[in-house]
Image (cartoon, rainbow, N blue to C red; front, side):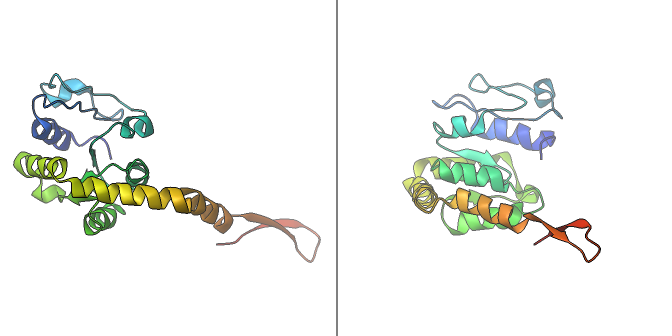
Length: 174
């Protein structure tokens, strides 16, 4: 969902000047950091980042609420501020908020002030991190990511069958 310059500009302004934090926005290949205006000293804009590694030391993840980033954040015990753009993201964002592992703001309601308030609320209230860490434990104890991957692989397993003429055809079970 990279390429939405206005959202990145709002994130840069909402995080603001250095507050003993470092911001690492991953903007993909659709944006150039020069297109985002002034970049604060505490910010490193990159086309891609080692997300899992960064999340291990993160206090917060600002995300579009894609399922991969959400699961990686929860697996690291990191709360999220989400800005859902489309697809499954609004539903994932609503679930994050419902379970107390973060907050969300719709794109149409996004302002620098609103985003700043959500970031500050999550940084100051330990309940968000506690809820994210709860899900971190659940994911680790249940091997949730492994189970999900196995279920998907099993659902799309290709079986070879032999038809009445003796020809081999593929049958996909879903």
